Image (cartoon, rainbow, N blue to C red; front, side, top):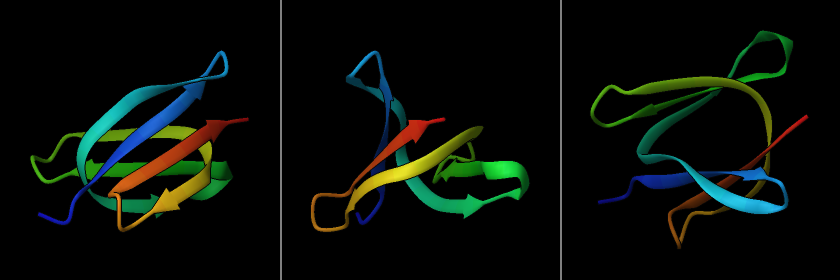
Length: 63
């Protein structure tokens, strides 16, 4: 599988945000929409801090 796991930085620590992420889309007003292969969606104001496609990992930071 090629899906990624998304993490959010909270209090300086990475916290699981959403597993099996298939879609990451920028939205208006600095929002980011993530959708898993199961249809679960999360929309939050964040920016991509790092992304490793080989490790299937996306790290977001709010702010």
